[in-house]
Length: 149
Image (cartoon, rainbow, N blue to C red; front, side, top):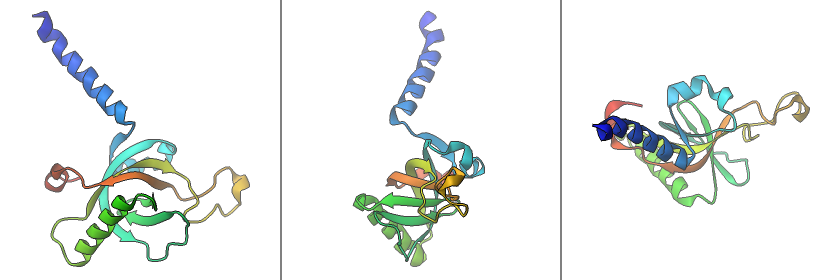
């Protein structure tokens, strides 16, 4: 009897430990977009639709892209992630039925990848645009295609 009562608590603790081990907190895209400024500096995981890979890449060291709700960038050394982005963008351009979903693991940041603060850096922040700096990009789990995101 005692084992049955402690089993659910142990499972909850195990799930919390596994979630924090990766260091990324999962958000639904709409909820993260609503509170993005509150999460600057946080490591997040979010699933959203790839909209555009920027043709004009005027920032050294990064590939800039947009999802439906976020401005994003991935370091150029993440070649497999960039290849995945380009493949999904190609399929979208060819009229694929499947939505162009990507799972982004990254940090919410104010990197000046889309321009600096109008008042200058003395205003306290480097950039007015909040960016997701991707550490890793993957295809989301199948359930996101079936249940929504």
